[in-house]
Image (cartoon, rainbow, N blue to C red; front, top):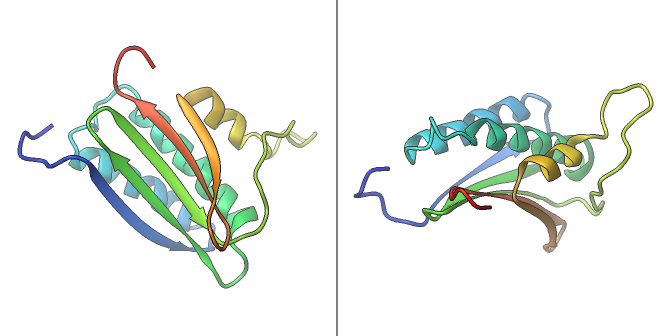
Length: 138
């Protein structure tokens, strides 16, 4: 990372409730990691996958029609934190997934890949977040 970069670093981007927003959010997160010198970090792909899962949940379940979601990516030198803010009233949970093998496993992946994750309340809606520690010991 460039020594002149001031920490913590945060990037925010708002997206419409549209399935095309998911790959755009993933690209935004990857771009943020690149700007912070983390493109070759061994966990960069995990961050991108978790952004995809959280953005998909926001598009499919969190953001009401006509609304969107905010993606926030933050880096403090030790931890990369991803937050997805939406104004929906639903609350995410780790479910068993659909019988047909499609969907329902996003938070299982986030739980498996991130060091920590959770849900916080905001008005209106919620923020679903996950964190990735850069140190060898999570």
